[in-house]
Amino acid sequence: MTEFAAIAAPAAPRSAELIDGKAMAATIRGELRETVAKLAANGTHPGLAVALVGEDPASAVYVGGKIRACKEIGIRSIEARLPADTTTAQLLELIDQWNADDNVDGILVQLPLPRGLDTQAVVERILPSKDVDGFGADNLGRLAQGRPRLVACTPWGVMEMLKRWGQPSGWTPAGKRAVVIGRSITVGRPMALLLLSADATVTICHSRTPDLASAVRQAEIVVAAAGQRHLVQGDWIAKGAVVIDVGIHRGEDGKLTGDVDFATASQRARAITPVPGGVGPMTIAMLMANTVSACRQRRGQGV
Ligand code: GUN
Image 1 (cartoon, rainbow, N blue to C red):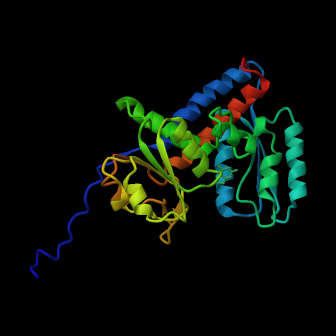
Image 2: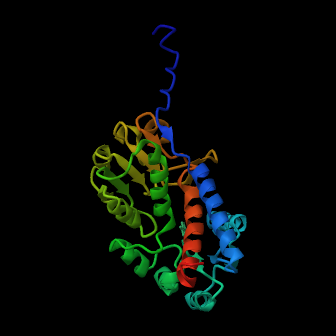
C-alpha cells in the first residue's frame, strides 16, 4: 500500500438542489397573515382547537409549533392538554363541545393517541367541515373522488413544495413515475391520491413490498414516508429524481435525520428535501392554510 492510498477519497459533492421547506413555509405563513388580517378587518377571526393527550415529548413539540404558528399568523388557538388516562368518551365529549362552538373553525387531535384510546372514533367524531387534518372518511373520501375539500397537511405540503420548486423551470409531476413509500392515512394514501390527481403514475410501496429498491429505481419522484431511518439508500435513487423525505428520526448523536440517506441520495437526485427544514415546516403551514380555508368555507366564501 502506498502512502497515497491511505488518504480517504473526498466525499462526492452534493449535486441535488435543496428544496427549502423552511423558506417556503415562511412565505406561506406570510401570505396567510395577510389573509387573516383582511378577515379580521371584516370581523372574522379564524380559530383552531388542538388537543394533546398524554406526555409524548415529540407530540408536545409538534403541538407547540402549531400553536406558535397560529400566534404568528393571527389565528386564535385553543389548546387542551389532557392526561394520558383520559377516556375515549371524555375526548369525544370535548370534540362535541368544539364541534358546537362557532368560534372554532378547525379541530386537531394530535396523534398518536395513548394506547387504549379509539383513534378512529375520535377522528370520525370531528365534523368534516372542521377536520383540518383531513383524516376523516368524508375528507379522505372526497380526495379519493378527486373533489378535495380539507386535505391532510403533510401530503398537501409536499404537493405545494413540488409546485413551488418546479415553477421556475416548468417542472410538474404530470406524466412522471412516482413512488410513495408508506400507506398511512396521515401521509401515504392521501399523498398517492394527490400525485394521481396531478397526473403522475403512482406506485404505493410499503413494508410488504418485495424488492423496494428496484421499485424506487424506476421513480422520477420518490416520497419516503415509511418511518424507518435511512431506509432509502442513495444508490436506489434514479439520476435526476426528485426526492421528498417525510421521515424524521433523532439519531444517537442527537441529530435529526429522515427516511432517506441524504448524503448518498443527494449525489444522484436532481432535487431533495433536507431533514430538518424540509417537509416538517410545510405541514404546519398547510395546517394554518386549512384552518383559514375551513373558516371561509364555514362562514361563506365572501369573508
Ligand atoms: N402526528 C403526526 N403528524 C400529525 C398530523 O399531521 N396531525 C395530527 N393530528 N397528528 C399528527
